[in-house]
Each structure stands twice: as structure tokens, then as C-alpha cells.
Length: 357
Image 1 (cartoon, one colour):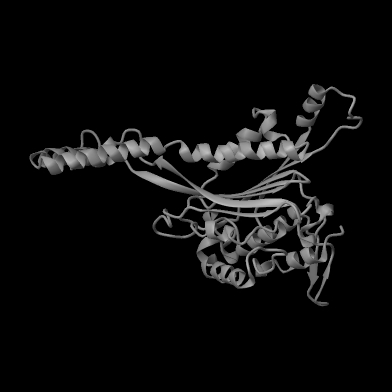
Image 2 (tube, one colour; image 1 turned 180 degrees about the vertical axis):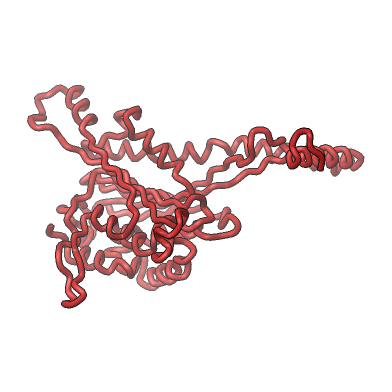
């Protein structure tokens, strides 16, 4: 496949991401800082190459969910708009793959190249597949305080192949091995837009890339009660959970990319529901750039709904605890009664019914 030399050179140098990006709005000094930061956090952010396949918790697992559109033979202008819409929305082909190694990732991306160690030369084509209409990539680690189940090499290969802007690394840095939740106060939105005069280096029509695109990265925080239903309200524990999204949309070709990083695969399940057989046709339609854009808005909405769901109940719980604390502060004589009840509940939960501490 014929692709721009600048893109091919960039992909072959994927280990130097993000310094190898073809056309970045970030100046070179900042790109080098991003690379240095990635090098410094890679050991806690990503699964180590030698750890893959040793233990279940350290196995690489990157979930892909790809969509392509295949028009039928004879589909033309003379069909009614209703009939044409029905055909278009019913001919989306879904490809699913759980990638577990860098070699599998290369095959999935269409990289058929190999390095001959004796001749120190590369054989085979590195880029052979056209971008599909829509691609979801899910990164996870079990929970946000474990390394993501992807090696550093695989991560930068994906980010380079799709020319993901460097600042997405800021959003990924909240994940990884840590004893406590990291950077709960960090929230941001970043964008990169090439809509009118797209750089020539980004134009690869053989890949389905016009160069006229926008990218955006943002993070959302959801909250969940991690205590059982039988836990008294005073003793409940809540967890704030982070998700980092990256999105790209080509306004000419209509191709869409999503990279979603979260501790678990909850958002993957919701996207499967959105794009599955039970989903609305208009939320998974890719027959035109306009339809693809509308479908991308539905995915944004899924993420926002996830983030909003439990905040009301968490805030209500906080208000109840604060109100109880203020009551005790105003009326100290109630403190003994309050803490006696709390201690009694805590003891009964530890020992169980009919047992004594």
C-alpha cells in the first residue's frame, strides 16, 4: 500500500513517540518532555514485557471493536431514502479482537513487516490496511491502581499508527501501580483541529485519512459505592473512578477512532450495548461522514451518562455525614450516643450475628 513517506517513517520509529509524530501542534521541546515523562512512568503505567503471560493479573489484554461499512451491489440513487437508510444501517460488519501480544497487534493493524537480524534490513510492508469506519480501543488494568494491561511498545505503536496527539499521555498518567487513587483533582480537555488546510503529511487517502480531522482528549470521573447493600449508611465506602477518552474524527472520510482507558471494562460493556443488535440504528450508522458524526455524539453521551449516574447519591451521603458531624459539634452530649451506635454497628459487621467480639 502506498502511504506518505513521512507517515511510514513515523510508524517505523514508533518507540520514539511522541517525538515521531508527523505533524504536531506541540513544539519539539515539549514533545521530548512528554517522551521523558512516558519513560519515567512506563514501569508503573504499563505491563512489563517480561511479565506478560506469567500471572493472570499481568497478562496483556487490549480489546478492539471495529466497524466497517459494506454497501450492497446495485444500491443506488433510485431507491427510496427509507429503503436506502435501512440497507446502509444493516450492513455494518463488526470485528472484535482481544489483542494479547505485540505480534498480534501488528497483524491486527496490518503490519506485515519483519526485520532480518542477519541482513539488518526490513522485509514486508508495514502498512497494508485501510482504516475502518469506526474503531474502539479499550485499555484497562483491573482497576485504576494497577498497571494497564498493555506493554509500552504496544501502547506507543497504537498511538503512533493513529497519530494520537501527545497530550493524551497526560490523561493516561493517572493510571498505573499506586497504593492510593492518583490525581483525583485532575480534569482537562485538549483538542487539535485541522479542518481547512490540512498538512500534506497527514493526507493518506489510501488509508482513509484526508488529513482534515479533529482530535480531542478528556477525562471523566464517576463514583460508585463499594460497600455491600447490608452495610449501614454511616459505614459505607465510596470510590471515585476515572476514565480517559481520546477521540478522532475525519470530516471527509468519516473515519472515527476511540481510545478509552479505565480501570475496568464497564465502558466497553456499555459501548457493546450501544452498538450491538439491541442498539438504535442511528447510533451505529457509518454510511456517510454525517452519519458517523452523529454516531460519535451517541458515544460521547454514553460516557457522560456513566460519569453522572451515582454523584447525586454520593453527594447526598456526604451531606448526611456532614450534618451528623455538625449536630455533634453543636450538641456535644450527642457524641457519646452517636459513636456508641457506630461502634455497635461496626462490631456486629465484623463478628456477625450471634457472635461476640
